Image (tube, rainbow, N blue to C red; front, side, top):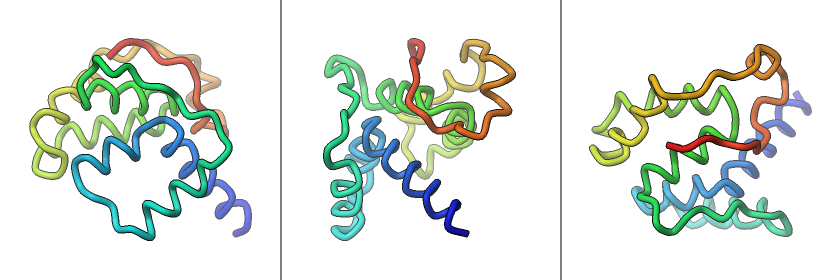
Length: 122
């Protein structure tokens, strides 16, 4: 149980550091306690600086790719739901469905799936 709570905190920290929370907050404003939680959990870490010239969809696509295979699957699911995230983001996340570069089988089966790694272009 304790290990699962720690993993949830790691996921929250990586979401915050990758810029994904900022993008989600632009679409649907997060409740204040949740915003404070993400700000506190990312305190003192190196946030990934996302290219300001890219669209929100491209930034979210890169953030999800950088967090690993589980989050790529999440992005693929979200691409099918424009009613939740909007048409622009859904179109951008469609790139995760068929244009994701191949990854090592070790990464797919690894237990540390949500680390921030290098990501390819979206």
